[in-house]
Structures are given as C-alpha cells and as structure tokens.
Length: 342
Image (cartoon, rainbow, N blue to C red):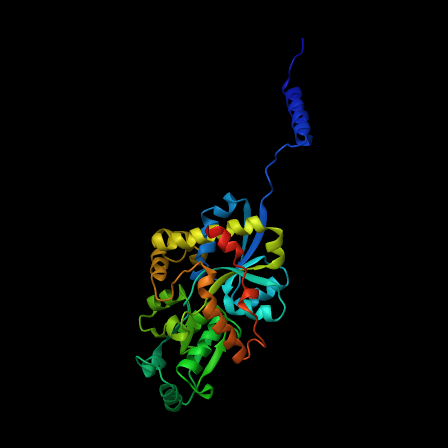
C-alpha cells in the first residue's frame, strides 16, 4: 500500500508544477512592465500620484517607480540619458530637448495656465492692481535696486512665461528687473523670507504661500502671462513607446481617469495627493483649496494645447532658449491618448 507523507506529497506537487510549466500553451502570469517616471513636485503632477496611489497602474500590470526633480530641464537631462522612461513636467523643456535631437514625445497633457506671478512686501505695493513698465522703473529708482523675481532655469515653462509676461505683455525694460533662477522649493522659501520681491509659482505653492503670508499678492494669472499657457505634459522616450505600447496606452487611460477624478472629487483627490506632495505634513484641506485655485486647470487632451504650444515654441526661439523649432506633429504622439480615450 502506498503511503503519502508530507515530504512525498510536496515533491509530487513540485514535479507536476514543473511539468505544467513546460507544457506548450501553458499560460503564466506576465511579469509587470517596469516604468520609472520623473515628476516635478507641483499640483499638475497629481494625476500621476492618483494613478500610483489608487493602484491603477498595478492593476494594469505596470510597476511604477517615481523619481522627483526640482525643475524640468534637470529632469529632461535624466531622460535624455535614459535614466527615466516617462516624465510629468513643463512642455517647454521637452520641446527644447527635441530641437537638440532627444527622441522624446508628448503623449498626454496634464494641466494648463498653471503659472502665476506672486509678489510681497514693498514691491507688491508698488505694483498696485495693474503692473506697468513705469511701475518697475519707479521701484528701481525709489529703492536703488532692481526687483528680484525668482523663477526656474532658462528653458523651463516658468522662465519662458515669465519673460513673455514681463517683456511682451507689460513691456518691462530688461534693465529694470533681475531674474533669479532656482529650484521650486527654494523659490517659495526665498519669497517668504524676503530674499525675492516676486516669483513665478504654481499650485500648491500659491495656496501655501498665501496661507503663510496673506499679504502675498498675485500680479498676474496664467492666462494673463501667456494666453492658454501650455503647462505640464506627459512625455516619454521613443524607445519606451516602441517597447511597451500596451502598457503606455493603459497608463494614459489611467491618467485620463485621474484627471476626471480631480474634477469630480477634489477633496478625495487631495487626500491621495497629500501623501506625495505634502508627505503627510500638509493638510489635505490645503491641497483641496489648491485644486480650486487660479493655478489649477487640468486638461488631459493633448490636442487642445497644440496652438498655444506652437506659440510657446516660437517664443523659446525668440528668447534664445531654443536655437530652432520643431513641428508639433514631430513633438507630439497623439496615438496613445486617442486609443485610450475611445
């Protein structure tokens, strides 16, 4: 009579499992697609945080690794070196990288009209309700120094739209203002510490700064700085798009779902995003207020930003951030959004 012991049973099961694995047509669970996504710590990256926090990427068989950067140009450098696969960042550095031969494409949009110009102290009072070139010149004459405005590095969206507002809209003489490039967190700290007179900032920095100092004034909204101002996009390396088309389509579909969730449930979205932006230190109510602020306008459809992107591309060339421009048809790959949005 054959007696089954625990050891013999386990051994038999192991043999059966090995045989099944070797049989033709046997289905085994696919390994998850691993994607490393860079992001800038701003509210416009919220769809990424929601996709990750809700487990939607994991449900689609995608394993995400999120990497933080302080500015778009720095993130683009990492992407060009193949260190990250996708990126949530401003469209301007993506376009500049394209002109330099970096093979990356915009596959979805995230937000528009994000940037605002915030000021405090004597400079805010001197600007009044409507800043003019004369008010800039008068401030410099009265104080004996140029106003210092903090922004991100040249080629970034904050730098590009700030210059557009200053020199195209307000028509400030470049000799009457000093631009100070720095990281996002340092910009907020410097503005509140009085080291800057003004700064280009985005949510949630706008809401946080005004909560910390109610005297912080908005000199210009995103629409005033650059009409239909293109902002944060989702970009990917061409190699990644070719290697993992189904995973990218699933990720874009989840991104669209996240943008819809923000519109329908800002309070719930704020609780999820707080774990990424606030690191548990910021009140979810602050992020909820940021979602409703003047710098919060989420748009997933990349088709809708094309005209403004073309205008921004032309302006980056005009100010020397890019030596040439590339056709939007080459910078955007609409196929993944179109497939996901069906």
